[in-house]
Image (cartoon, rainbow, N blue to C red; front, side, top):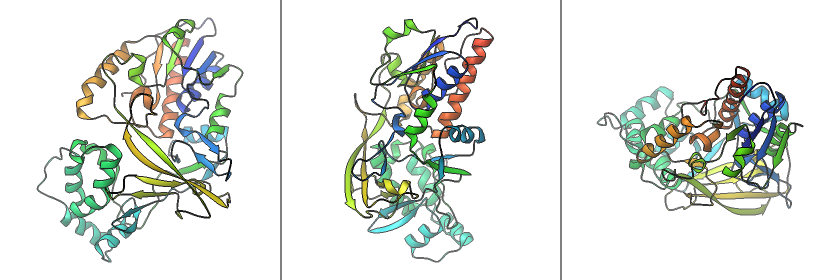
Length: 386
């Protein structure tokens, strides 16, 4: 790559990662072509108006924007109007409805107590399994952390359904993202900025891509044969796909959606989880509740069921089990050895990323590419420790 001319850059994927990088490079004077295999931009954040109800639907499942990164917050507000949205989740288990994350009300409901914060802390400490030293898996982490009753009510069934695995097969680190709260605070996130775009995520990504230096090709895959026509590639597709799965396939979970339509209000909330193992689905989302500033007579919901992703399925969650780490390491080493390509995003780095982190890392990657161009140095293929 050289700084003496405008570069021709291919970006594979029109989600947030690809769009943010494309915009940054185009603003710096480079010629960018974005390839997108779907017939729309915004990736799994894609939103669209339901033609029957006019509800703004999150087509690939609910997405709530939350961040404490001021640079990212300013960036998304540059391209759309963000409406405040405080995400709250409910769960149905054992024939009753509880609050999530597990908080003081959840604890008092489940144990039929009236404990205060300090009393609840002592009570849960007494419930915890102190015989467990260093937890070896999700189940041991839960039992050591909260005891059997809370674990079996709110985590055992849901986890088995979400991951398709026994909790003893899931790393203990997964549970560290799910703390207990010893207060009645029921907001799902703690970040200072929590919002949903007034006009949907797709409108924001379209605005990011709206630049004369960017060409977007929908329903078009970026193939190995295309690479020779570009000075550099940005790959936000599956990491293993870039290498034609030479070391095997990395594992993902995917989601199946079953539509529910009704008049009025179906759930009374945006998301209802279902923790009982005998209920096959994990949650139902009622999409009009993601836009409380709108009013709709009809409603549209989607019931979600998780399963292992196969060829042709939309990948959602990287599994990252211990037995997959050797294969992942081979791909990461191969990626770092690549030239003229940068790997980004959830698929390209094989990590679970929230939207704000995706945008932050895309901005970092774009800055890194431009810095390398300016100083005529090689562009790193990975800007994060995946």
